Length: 181
Image (cartoon, rainbow, N blue to C red; front, side, top):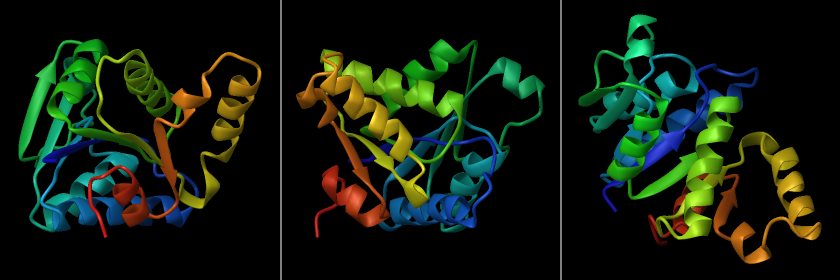
């Protein structure tokens, strides 16, 4: 495994745990020699994880649409930055550059990216691990909805199991076979 795509908020959130988790996840990637692939922003948890990786001497690949460059939110100190035309190209390139996918807390953009890559796994478009770092129970309501959808016959239970969910960085990486203890 050489790269992990992280989806997370362009906001910092209201709990210190979110920022701490983003930095801890970034440091874990550096410790394992894994490149961070993410959306290229300097804002929020996105900026936190990128800064943590860079400050620890790791590699960060950002993929950002031209429109967001124009809004001046781009992180300018990345190892590599790809500028693409739109969000569809961004998501495809991030997927192509990554060996696994992890969502940290975030908003609708994070949810959308997570569910697209998770759906691609369900459909067999890729066999890469997909995980949630469930910081301070942030994803509990989403997981309840996912299980409810399964119980109502809209999501197969074997597909629910494709999503690795842990509250601890190392436990998540281990469950995704990124590291093994």
